[in-house]
Image 1 (cartoon, rainbow, N blue to C red):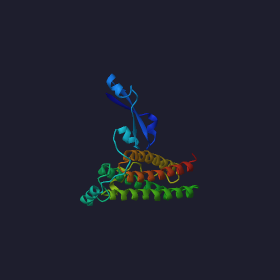
Image 2: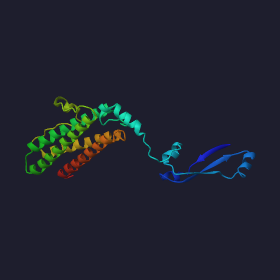
Image 3: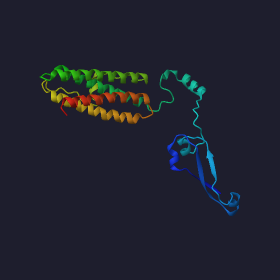
Length: 235
């Protein structure tokens, strides 16, 4: 006798439920008689998660921790600080990516600061004020990324000789009177980092949710910067 489980799709939409599994039964005459002339056998399953049903595991939704094992692991690797065995990414690669973020944000800070100081013209006050605000936020992004590098056991890289090579955006210095070009240069840079940071966020996923949330927060502010610049350009 072969029992083939069939789970109606609609039952997979809820996390916890009681579902009857209906079995298609291939039987001989003898087994058919034993099963009361081929009536469907129904098995009542108590609440299980969707993952348990799909994965074929007979598990409950209870949250169970092996606290003793976790304690032993924590004590064995004290020098690793906040990075535990549950960390799901290549730590060294994350540190490398964050150091590139630091370089990018420092270059953005330099570019915004230079533009804010050198800008001239009738619209200078409004544009320079926006550049100054953005510059402050870019440096804050760099410091936050550096703090995360340190948490992961790495060394934040602020080496001036390597900043421009590692940055994802360019340092530009348009003519002092060309406010439009300054705005365009900064808007282009913001759009570049928005795309790159989105890729970093997707790559991090659930492997490093702390760094992912950091990058999501930074990206949100970069999107605000792009919106501000577009307004100043009259877009």
